[in-house]
Length: 429
Image: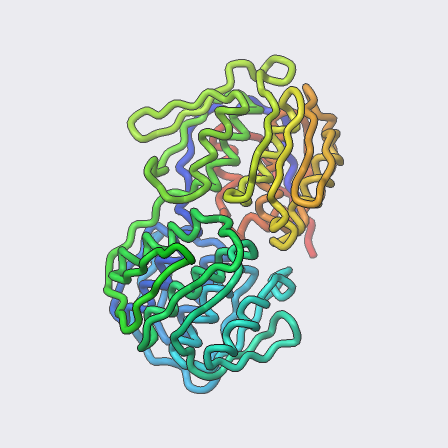
């Protein structure tokens, strides 16, 4: 276990945004399904990436990191039941369950942290309707056997887009055609758009319909060298740091035409009052009023339905913005690595913010400065990273610093590179 101590600083400098974790999960799985040698790069060596590589190996592929890339090659499928350790990665779990089912491979899925408690009921209800036996006591471990059959798949769009993505990977492998039909409105649409983009890159076609998606069967994934774009959800932490800590902060490695829903961070922080300009593909964020009360920032209303991962960073900026910020339609954050709404309410309250939780969001009244103090990281990478921006104003000690390894192991290094103060203290076991 470790703690990180953030101390006040004016930030300024450049950062190379890491490759998108969401795009990398998808590219690694598609590459494994080609049955041919493929290289996916760049890839950050985060815990979630190792979880997906574990799943790829359980499929019978060879997969190893080499110089910031992952090389995948066909291998021999393991005999007997495949055991898939998904770590704490919800994407790994929900993407791989239907893929193993489509291949008719008996598999047992295990996980750690909060993953065994996270919702999986969409699959436990749906897969038995299509030829797959599911054994579970309600979460993980979960065992499947039998071969997935084509047909109509009806599922909600507001629990997690990861269930839809898992089916989009699996259904093209079946002999017959299938259709995915949404029974509730789709949330986090950007993640589905990203899935469809990666599928096209690997030669798989899916057609959007008025009800969902039509998926032709009998398709084959085609080998493709894949370049992983930068992660817009991680860029949000540096925009928040620039809003509180001044800047200028130059963000490299982001695609302006990305389909990632979190690309909305640029417009959201502009609405807060942060100046952001693009120069030769680099986004430069600066707050020349960082030395003033409220830093020239203003509160606003934020619908987080399509951008749930940005809520922790948005909440920290809102804590310093004049007036009231209301974040709504974020109830799904209660079933992430932590209850992120409760975690951010508790953490920001602990360091002096005026914040209260609602059923589906947060209400924050900004203050010119925060008192600082000690906050619980709740073993949640996004909570720990979000609080770095608060540390630009006041001293903040955050527990569970090691949790950043899940998605962005180089975060503290990159935060220091723009002038941030982050001292990590190993607390032992």
